[in-house]
Image: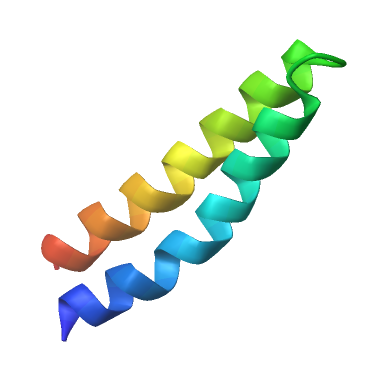
Length: 52
């Protein structure tokens, strides 16, 4: 059941990664922030899910 929850977390992060790729040439600072948010939005829920 936990793996299903992780699968539900990944699509929003995928959207952030695609946005970061799209804005990379115009605004690198925004792209780096989006990449950071995407990584945190995948890693933090995964850690919370497996450590409770």
